[in-house]
Image (cartoon, rainbow, N blue to C red; front, side):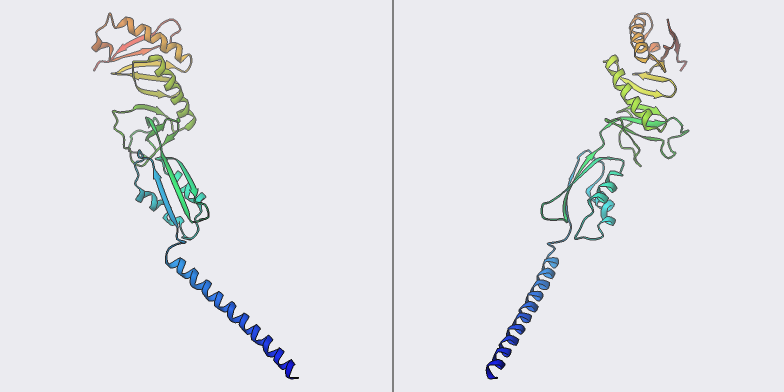
Length: 254
């Protein structure tokens, strides 16, 4: 009987020792987790790489994504990327997470590369919404709340607010500028017809077909007329090249 009692006591002691060890480990784990949280080890950490041409500060970008960081120990990169790419000045957002850390990310911001200014031909004034913007070097129309580039710096494009039309205009603009070479295009209006204005104020109506052929014909005519007509008068002229075997020429009365 005495041996049996000793065996039972030993088993109880071992069982109690196991429970105590488990409770100690559990306490240490909880203490360790709290210590890690208090030291900020698991807090969200974002490293930014921002295009120097982006007219937005890091503080502005942080405010945009702040509502999305509901859980500072875990970040939804898809929501963050979408929120940033919704900003007109931002062309592309790349987000990478650091290995082993689900709450540490790097955000790379690429700014829109501006190619042309844009005006909506359906607007009576530029003070209305969606009336002014820019066309990127990818042929993409974007409309920021504020225009930042001087009006004298960029070529002016005028179309309806339609991305397909804008893309076609930008493609045509590049083709026309190659043809005209040293004669810079000042503005390009695309409706059911196409109209170019060259520096300083020479307007050429190309119509809706055979535009490249008509533009090449204009260049020949223009070179010949420069020998016969004063530069001041010719620089304010309008050439209508839509006639099969000729053109019309009008001078500004201003």
